Structure formats: C-alpha cells, structure tokens
Length: 89
Image (cartoon, rainbow, N blue to C red; front, side):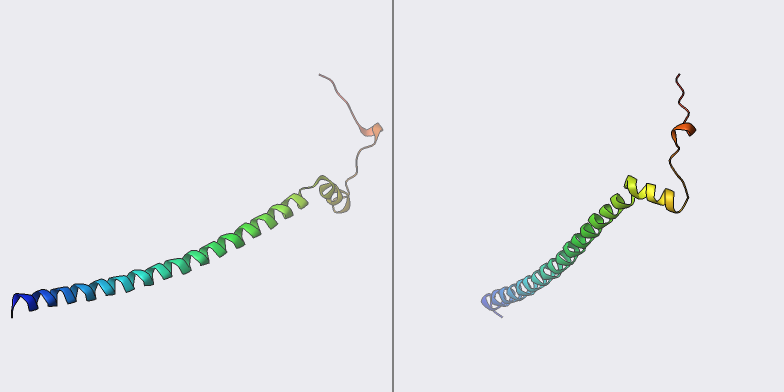
C-alpha cells in the first residue's frame, strides 16, 4: 500500500472516531439537560412545599391559636385579679 492510501485510511478512521465522539457528547449533553430539568422541577416543588409548611407553622404558632387550645382542650383560663400575685425584687 502506498503512503497516500495509509494516510487516507488514518484520516477516515479519525473522522469516524470524531463523529462517534460528537454523537456521544450530544447524547450525554441531552441526558444531563433532562436531569437538570428534573432536578429543577424537584427543587421548585420542594420550595413550594417549604413555603406552605412555613405558613402552616406560623398558623399553628399564633398566640390566639395557642390560647384556644389551652382553653378548649386543657380547660385553662386566665387568672382573675384576685388570683394574681405580683412580687418585686
């Protein structure tokens, strides 16, 4: 075989390997893009859920809610003036 034929075969092989590399890189890029979109959606859903839980926590921690539970479930009442003891140090 002549040097030209060998050089041509090497160049054809290099082009084929390069083309396979490009196809593989594009496939990986698409796969990573799909994963990024999935993780972005999951992050957005978790942020939404976190905000909802913060609102729920604030609702449960309101003073009037605590007072309602103390009166309703526990039968607690605020002391009257005669039942209060004030001390000074």
